[in-house]
Structures are given as C-alpha cells and as structure tokens.
Amino acid sequence: MAKVSIILFVLLMLFNKTYCQVQYDNEDSIRALVNNFNYSDYIGKPIKNLLNVEPIKRYKKYSFIDRKSFVLSGLMIGFTDEVFIDIYVADIRFQPAFNNKRNWSFRKLQKEKISKIKVYNGRKVLKEF
Image (cartoon, rainbow, N blue to C red; front, top):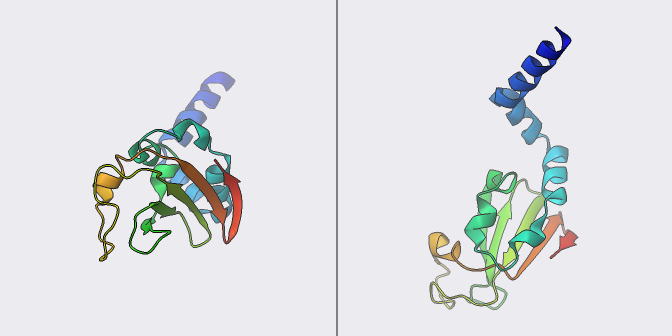
C-alpha cells in the first residue's frame, strides 16, 4: 500500500502543471536551475539545441547582442530581471552580421553555433563556458 501511495504521489507531482509552474516562478528556483545547468555540452552546437531544453526553454525574453555597434555577436535570453544568459557566436553564417537597423532574424540566429556562454545573476557573472 505504501509503494502505491508513493507512486501515485510521484505521478501526481509530475503531471500537475500548477505545481511545476509555482515551483518555476520562484526566482530562487529559477536561479538554481539556470546556474546548475550543464552548458558545456552545447558549445559548438546550434543555439536552437540549447533553447529547446529544460530549463532554458522557459526563458521569458530575448535580445540580440552586438558587441560592436550593429554587428551581431549573439543572443541574451532572460528568465527574470536578474537571471539571464548571454550566448555568443564567433562566426555568423546564416545572415549578414552587420545590420544598421538591428533587426536580425531570431529564427536564422538559432542555426548559428555557440562559441561562448555566460550565466548572470544581476551584473555578476556566475559561470562562463
């Protein structure tokens, strides 16, 4: 009987979306999930591979990074106002890197290969890959 109760409890927790949403909406749990993720597996892989896995796919906003004015160099994805990651690309191949309107294609950028990742909490870099 105890085994059945434990199994039912685990199944309920796995399929209860309200529980998952409440757990994820807590900024401390978001910070822990993002901070403990293994980013090194995604260096050299397309950005879309990283954006499609938990917990990364839960990002709420994104912005293009141009370290030199109007020259695309990556993508910033944010989970909260304090928790975000920068994804850098060394070689832009699927669209022109220079764009004086800064209106690059998010879809095309996702095809680019990741060269570096920085994980932030506020202005502090927590990890760099």
